[in-house]
Length: 97
Image (cartoon, rainbow, N blue to C red; front, side, top):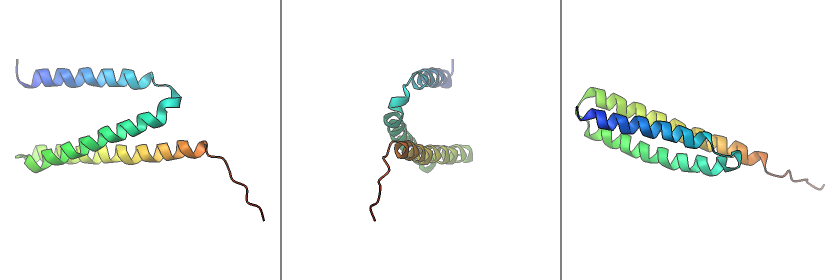
């Protein structure tokens, strides 16, 4: 058993568990869930930057860069979707002339 196998098992288990939890979330909780995933993605960005700075191989640098791009895209998309959802619940104000 190599050192990679337990880490891969934990990664796969957490992926399936995360998908199951997110799939069962009520639509009313979408905005709080998006803010939570944005926070998690921000942590992933910081970790990926640290991997890039400490990497000794070109492969690690490429994977770290892809992780930064993917997590940043997730953060921006999360804010964009949350903003669109919140706009749906705003009341229109009528201007008096």
